[in-house]
Image (cartoon, rainbow, N blue to C red; front, side, top):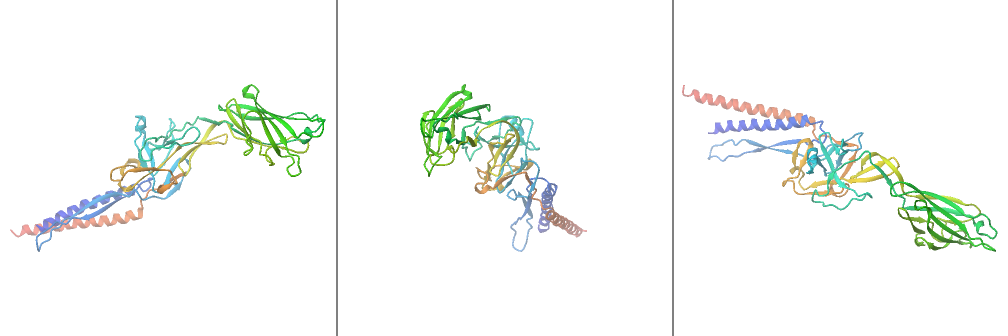
Length: 431
């Protein structure tokens, strides 16, 4: 009966508008929730075939969709590990409870406020732990699968950790007095002590002696350079004969270097290697014919510049995440180290992800398979520290839809009231 179909259609209308009201209420309630993606309710008509000359109302049904692909505005914060994704990628996280059980299922989120907890894990107030690929001791990140979670692990920061860097390179720029290699010179050897740090961060010294060759007549322009290592008990680890040019065009520059002991001198780089207690160390003294490195001029011994790598042991001071997703630890000795790399996850159908609590999402067959990209590479965008992503809810727009929904609900209720009155009139015919 046509009048009955009108009643059923209006009942469906009431239910559909109630569903839309629920999504609007959810959106408004989460208008201040960081990372919230608003939900939308779409209406779809239902057509029921009827006989010729009659019409039967089919009613309406709804589908609800969460617009995960929409991104909110980024706002600045004061925490270095407040993170937001600027692009379509998503951060890999795992529930705190899963980590406690030894499992690391991957969930996705677009923003989060992560701080080290009592165990050192970077955890959000909701209990989500950030995941990344661990770096090796030298800060390099190995190659991990891009289509699997193998290799991803909860990021753990030891706030009491120490770090130091061994000295593996020393660059010397020293002037030797030309007068010391002349006949009858009594100047003697020149000594230079250079501190370095071994593999355990301990301090040691290289004792470098420059002994001039004093001829009977004229000038030899020759020196014997010895390198001794205090960590090796003062043993000589390298000895070299240095000859300097005295011509007008290249006067004072290195002419030749002869190896007596230690690693061979490379004229192309101006470097030789000696074995100290902790391993090989490269010492650069300059290339022949150039004024960098060792020179022999005038009558003054002058260490012009000594540069080296390596640092003593230092304490952790801060943690930051750069746009490429590298988690860097800074130490009070002025160095920083890469501890982890956070990839960005991408799927082909973002809105097909399963929505979970705490603005997290799970990969489903509807979303398609996932791929782990390097941040700032590919289609996923980059990672922004000191930032959070705001809710995508537009309160003004939601209130407008709220008015429309209220009117539509009232109209459907009015139809039901009208149908009831018509049925009452039909019943009154018998009277």
